[in-house]
Image 1: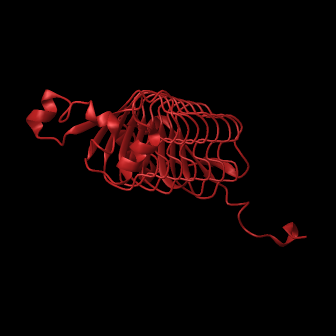
Image 2 (image 1 turned 45 degrees about the vertical axis):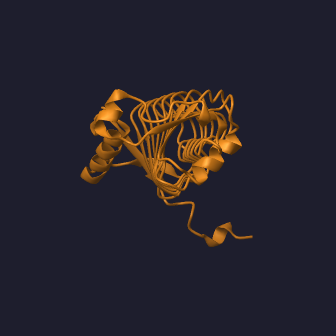
Image 3 (image 1 turned 90 degrees about the vertical axis):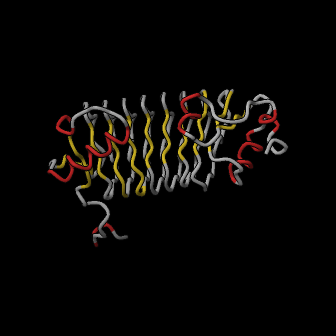
Length: 248
C-alpha cells in the first residue's frame, strides 16, 4: 500500500490513538494530500488495502473519497471541495470542516457527516444512506432525493427538496423559500420557520409514526432535539397525476 500512496510512506502506520490500540481497532492509515494526489487517494480507496483512512491537508480539493464501494471509514481533516463522497456505497465518511457543492451526491448507502456547513445541492439525487450536516446547507439541499435521509443541524437554503421523490429531510433550523417544490413522496421535517412553500408542498399532520421515525433520525445524527418541536411537510399530490386539461 505504501508504494501505491506516497503519502502513506511517510505517515505513522497503525492505530491513531491509545484508545484505539486498547480496543483492538483497525489501524488508521494517513494520506497527506500535499504529497499524494486525489486521484491516487481515490484509486486506493476503490481497491482498499486498509479499512480506516485519515485524509490530511485536503485544502478544499474536489471529489475526495468519491465513488467508494467498500465498508471503509474515511476521515477528512479539513474542508472539502466539490462532490466529496459522491456516489458513496457502504463507507462512513466524515469531513471535519465544510464541504462544497454536491457533497454525497447520488449516495446509495453508508453515512456521510459534515461537521461544518455544506454548499449547494447537498445529497442531490441520493438513493439511500444517511447524510448529516451539522452546520447549515445552502440552496437545493436534497434536490431530487430518491430515498436518502438528510439531517441538517442548522438552516437550509431556497428550493431544498425540489422534486424530492423519496426519503426524509430533517431541518433543525429554518428553511428558505420554495421548500419541497414539485415534491413527490419524500417527508420533510422542519423545526424552525419556513419561507413560502413550493408548488404542491403542504403542511402535514405529525402522527406517532412520524415522531418515531424523526426520533430515530435525530438520534442517528447525534442531535438532541425533540420530535414535538418539528412540523411535517409533504406532497398535496396535485401535480404528478396526468390531467386531460394539461395536454396540448
